[in-house]
Length: 488
Image (cartoon, rainbow, N blue to C red; front, side, top):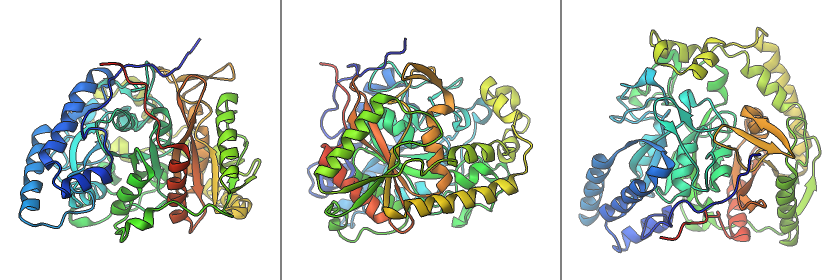
């Protein structure tokens, strides 16, 4: 039997390691620490947790310390610090980083060093953030766990199980206190699912809200970042490129909002903008069931208790049974038509360096001979009908997944039934099909002490309310949970 539970495998972070974005920046501006001290503390934490996690593929030690010294010198010279000044962060290994290897978890790209940063990375660095590591993902980011033949298997800071995938390295390091925030990607749940597995928060931005240039491979199979001069990647017919977005992970919604503002190139003018939402009279929709995958009773119980807590706090929760029906099936049908031409072009003649599972996925694509054009029309029709049902509430909550987490082999028991692979992302895929912003946020723990999250979806025009509701939930629940740290 699969038994997932919170177990003490790591000691708690010490000093500024484990601090959030805002706290680090404020400590640096107040001269309580130097940038070098902040970055060194997080590099030390990386060294401490990596033997268990195996979450990094490259640690940018020399580059990070050099950047820290430069930033400190600028601060000492009177520079006005940027919104992420001196804050350490990590980046998933499918997002281009100039001068730092980006291998997509594959031996086929073992020597790939992009010439330019992805737009998202460039904006974070311009805001003062310091890249300390690239993180592990399944090969080509295809998987519900984080493992590949090149870099091995990443484990959760919560115990002997998976941190989820495909942004699992990001979520694991963040939960372990080794970085202040992370940058990942989300196609069918690759931010939201690992965020739940590790008890952190993540945002899947609405389509087009964050510039996605520099996700590798780009159109035509480019592996160098592909946006020299700031130009966006050219349009592509790839289903993956249509739906996949770049987004942040953090340990609080306040930190997430600060990072998201930078990614969206929208300044946060006042910290008051991040204050929690006034909950009185706000209506939240709750999709209590739909037709993708059954949700384990223990997960449903946590979400039901959270819904009660929202009601007690003054919100109105209305149930929307079956509001998301059909979305998962339509997303899967579209995904099955994707020929993955960009990835094929990038691999070129290096198929021998591709792992067996990833090779089968790519060589077998498209899995369906269906004409995608009618499927896109069907999706738009379904999306319009879903939005009509969601009109009763600006924000709608939904489970992240059928189970709280999964074993290292990508399996979980859902009410006693073995559930595996992408079935564990069914609810995430349904939300992806809508193209809307979705926040993955912990709202409780199951009987084994593992975090359970909900994804809260913003109807068009209510993205700001989504962030502010997230701040309210952080206050209501006491914030993101932490693993049961081992005694030192």
